[in-house]
Length: 145
Image (tube, helix red, strand yellow):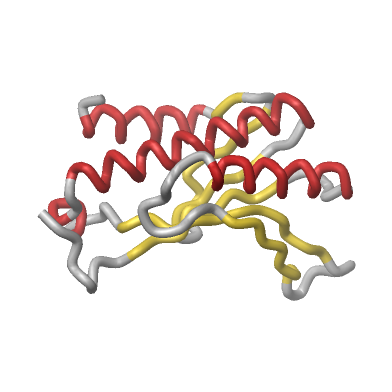
């Protein structure tokens, strides 16, 4: 099975929840670059971003990273090749592992989103229950890995 041209993509986003000190921003940029260099990515490697938060007073900037995955939402999940779904799971797992390391080593916490929907977080070096039991475990079970 191959992926069709019109198969939708979703943004997997991870946002830094701490006050963005230069030390944390530098560590986050290095962490994203490190995880991006570790493998060949299905669509695109994760990249760092910073965006001004509109309407924030005083002005605020969001810091984080993102990469794309092919949608597995109905009806597209049935059209997603198993090897692509497995690759995306491994990509997300690799990013989450790096976020856990950054959290443990630098005290960072993150909110994770899929196309703007919160799917969980990382804090104190670990995934929260929502991310672990709501996304990662069911996905892994569905893939039978």
